[in-house]
Image 1 (tube, rainbow, N blue to C red):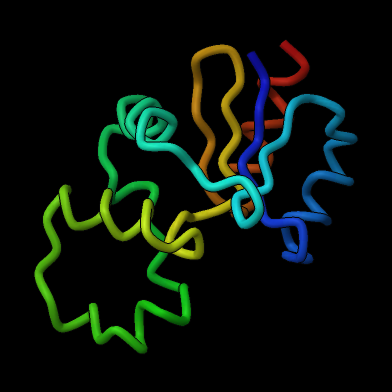
Image 2 (image 1 turned 90 degrees about the vertical axis):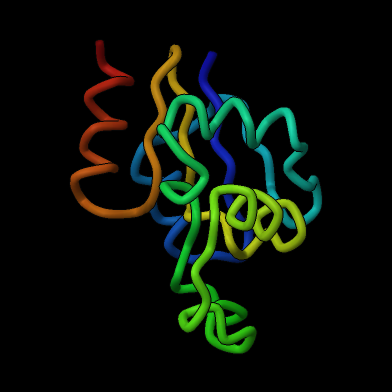
Length: 115
């Protein structure tokens, strides 16, 4: 299975999908919310909900979350309630997960696609 969770209006996501020539399954997380089951599957592959959590989200600062100690349950709930808390894009490729937009992550996606 090959799938990506992304935001259509995110220029970084757009650039990465274009760079990869992505023509596999996509889920635009603003219009099609992530389900609890999908998030659980991602967390198993990632090792934690925290690994999927974006501290760059504007709401992270506005909700003053930096000063709070968050548990795995908190990370899960925040991502389910607000799509911007998912670090993106998230690629699922044949049982592996690739999270975020770093060069290393995008390079790993490229390598996985060409295996």
